[in-house]
Amino acid sequence: MPLSEKHDETKTYDDILNAGPPVDQLARDFVTPTELFFVRNHSQIPHLQLDSYRLRVQGLVSRELSLSLDEIKTNFEQRTLVATLQCAGNRRKELVSYKPIDEGLAWDIEAIGTAEWTGLRLGDILTSAGISDETAGHVAFLGLDTLMRDGHREAFGSSIPLDKALGSEVLLAYAMNGEDLPLAHGCPLRVIVPGYIGARSVKWLSEIRVQEDPSDNHFQQVGYKLFPPHINMYNVDYHDGMQLTKLPVNSVIVRPQDRSLLPAGKIMVEGYAMSDGEHEITWVSVSPDGGESWQRAEFLNEPQLWTWQLWRAEFDLPPGTHEFIVRAWDSAANSQPETIASVWNFKGYVNNAWHRVKITLK
Ligand SMILES: Nc1nc2c(c(=O)[nH]1)N[C@H]1C(S)=C(S)[C@@H](COP(=O)(O)O)O[C@H]1N2
Ligand SMILES: [Mo]
View (cartoon, rainbow, N blue to C red):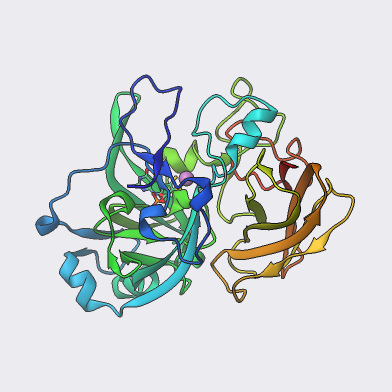
């Protein structure tokens, strides 16, 4: 596999697969080739018995369901959507170099990818089960992968609000880029929650539960919560904090890479931008001189919902050191904060500060 593996240096043993594409290969295509799509796992990939696989639908429903893979594929209308998946920890590396962060993978800009997902609508399965109670407010998911926590084995889980779950964009996918979902990406079935942090898109899905409150799973109640910059691991109260849902507007320079040495003259700057998916990216500005002057970037694909926006901007530059900056806006006029200091948080999530790259031209 062309991905390079990433390890959490705070873990004493680490046979958990986490990997991303070489930055040089990132965002070259609008749809990311599957072998270049990042992988983020919190524990070992589960052992699967596809013959006996069942998806259970439980909780505040009129009819509990237990569906085989065959039933999932044949009883529900097949839907396909191109959507971008981004880890909440994307761009954590820049946060770490500003102020240390104790755990988490030091992702650079590669924990993002776009795929064509095929499956069924979560809403169709919920309609088939029937929401039975008006107190229903959230839909919780469990995966087949488990971790030990406080002496108990616990599955990876998350939840999303019922309103989002009923959105036509939220899928249970069994195929990725036209082929069966690969094991690393959640075979045989995973949730795809476009616009939300990747952690809500549970892989190796085993259970869907309709309930009043958000999931009490560790990854909903402790992990993937956002805290302001003055909170740290010593003064944190995990009952506080904001459960992450939608991604903020972001944009990233992919090429040239930071600290490149290149010939002076024409330089093509390229990258991606992404919003909460509900709003298109409408404008990307690139500065070639640390923010003195700005130029509008050209879009490489038609703006669309639920996916990244690829862009490029060309500059003609003399020898010397140059700092490029990128920032984006979406159709709701959301944009990005200027400094890392204003977005730093001790868990290292959703860094969307202006992205900067320094290069030297000879
Ligand atoms: N069951 C399960 N689902 C999971 C995870 C996991 O560890 N276990 N990781 C989540 C996180 S944090 C992200 S960013 C995405 C990554 O999806 P990918 O590996 O297909 O890129 O899967 C999410 N779903
Ligand atoms: Mo993630």
